[in-house]
Length: 471
Image 1 (cartoon, one colour):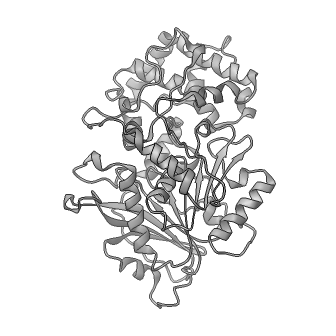
Image 2: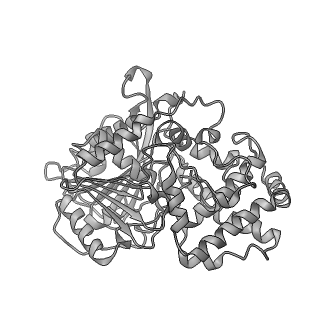
Image 3: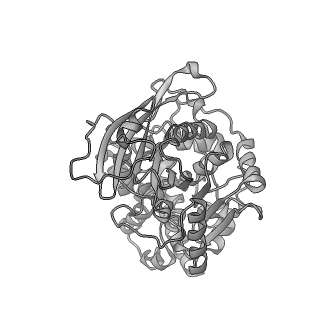
């Protein structure tokens, strides 16, 4: 969504671009041997690789699981197979073919390290994770950007599900957080017969692109008045001191070799970072951390500069910072939409305001006109036809200001975790709701109620869930 911390950007790029040229390695003799389907005595790896178009990049044994990084041949255009194919990365955390399977999507690149999404731990199942099309390296060689839309991505997911369902015949749940939660929702809209349930975390729902008053109301009421004023004062101070702070920014950019061709100028990038400051705080932090924000009136230039960097990240709107996220901005400019705030406390200090998503797409990429009917269609479908869908939001997360809504009677629900931010999960819900949601997911997955067993190594918060770029 709009901004990540500078250290995080490096991490996301690193894990999202792990080379797909690794040598395939089989599990060693001491590796666990998860159960196979009763219908086959073949090793699960052999069965996976027997799927046409599926190739192995690498296998990593993990206690109780086997973890595969795979590549699957997909059509560039599901509507016109003559346009050729591309290789899409996915991972498979295999536990047992008799267990349910969770289909996890980040909506961005792919984490190629073993980890479980929360629903996978709740149902104690297998997990398939898919890299979103056009995120490196899952990008067609001659990129036809017109094929980057939510329907094409849903069809990618449907083909992977169809290929793997014979090996994993149990119940399936779709999940994801932020843009991943949006992806899971769009998949359900276009292929409602595939999944037995959907768990979408902190998923924005921008139904009307040019009507963003819900965000203004959120920022007028979130947290305490004292905290809001402290954050606003720091943001305002960064614009008042634009000239001296830009000199620091310019010196940093020169030292790092950072450029600003996509956004246009260093000044535009500077203002974009500052405007993201308050949003980034509430997206990633909590009311309790507000005391860490220095007093703007007495802060030195360096303190103001460092504070904005800590919470917003000066690196983000450079060409290098934007490069990996271009597919997201393209979709925000064509289908997903993006928020804009009034920021009356900054009157007279801003020059550009919240810039449109297309400003963060390189000029050589053609960006067609926005399609307002796409999100309206999804919203209407979820409200009137969606079944067995659970939406989880954080009460203090800006992205929850515009959220999905559901009609009663179709076993679909919207729950809010008190005091939680963009990392909200079932575990953050109030006790009664947490117990209810856990039982509901287990019922959808066809497993008996059981305590959730966590694994600190597999269940650590994922970069794609907890730290996604804002827009």
